[in-house]
Length: 350
Image 1 (cartoon, rainbow, N blue to C red):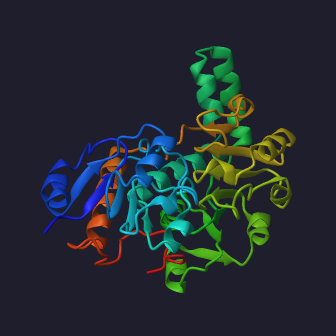
Image 2 (image 1 turned 120 degrees about the horizontal axis):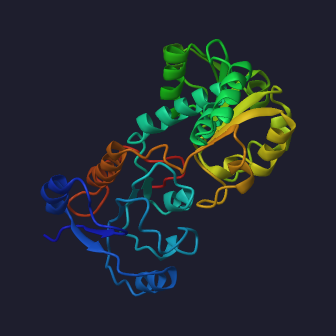
């Protein structure tokens, strides 16, 4: 009996070689995509070059994007045999996961693999925006004694300890739950959150979180707002001129989610006016281009979308993608079970 076919897009396996050989290849025939761009990939699908494959496997989120956005032009070209699209990474704004679901295809990210790393990065951002660590670091790197001394004197007059301040979390998922626990236990912060779905009481109790029924209520009381929502049509520019106006004067903003959740022009205006006292951004609206205006501000902590950038994350991204396919695709290529980390269950149609 022939094995189900998996279409592998992007770079080859890098980390989990034993699992790939002993578990994955024993169950599936893996075919690598050879198309360098969208047009040729479309023609390959139309010609059924890869046959009736059962799964799409993208083990490295920084490769395998040659065909561009997976949308309602590309997805209908997939054979009916496809049951799952398993990708490394946590974000999925480059794929129309609802269209995939309506076509009977699970879309799975590698959620969980990056939770520790991203929550650690957000915690670092919290410390940085309260204590003005970026300003201090830039001053120290001048190696100028006068700048060092002046900054040493200034920092103590403009910085605060996070303890007893309110951390307002927008979007309570696995990452932000870890951040909430760390910020409360290590820094002594009060945790408040807003999400379209309220967490169960036992989860709120575990992290000591207070729920807000709407975003405005949260923004009004938070000393620091940390964004943890996926990017979609409802969350693009979620934090904008109007919502920033709701915030406390001198509040802080952190974004480790997606750049376009936060309107950068509105943020720049708020930083210039003092409405927002500091910001920490791991993600940016026009990556890899960072706003040159924000880059010149010493009250803004900037990183290069590395919140999840730890080796442990990469290893488990790759492994998680394989395990999702193994969970779903049976020996005959049909659906044999449910994936571990689906993101489109609401739109998924069997």
